[in-house]
View (cartoon, rainbow, N blue to C red):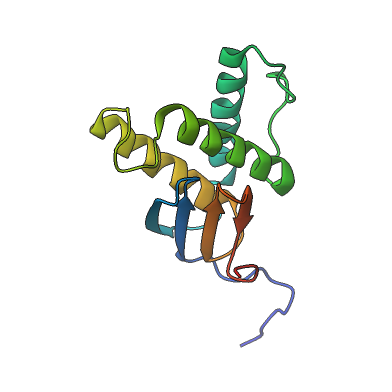
Length: 143
């Protein structure tokens, strides 16, 4: 048997835990099992869509035009978009709080899809979106 050291590692399930901590200190967490790394483009497009939709509704300029395809490897841009979306939903609707203004089913669906997209895009196995500090942390950067 010949082992190629330059071959990509075998693709398999990727286990992650993602926690979002609101400005008020409440937390929502989710354990996810990603089949592989193949969902990055779809997750990036979803985050970009949310970001541009919020910006347009607020009447603010959109940094990334609709003519461009979002780069799923532009981690810094994606982190900024994720924090913007989460902060908007936290302050406008209390989406990530137990007592949200949104109907329960709608809230749960949004939180699940949003956190899944974030876990797909962000590096690390133990992720924290800390809205009070305006940071996204992983196991290497947790204090």
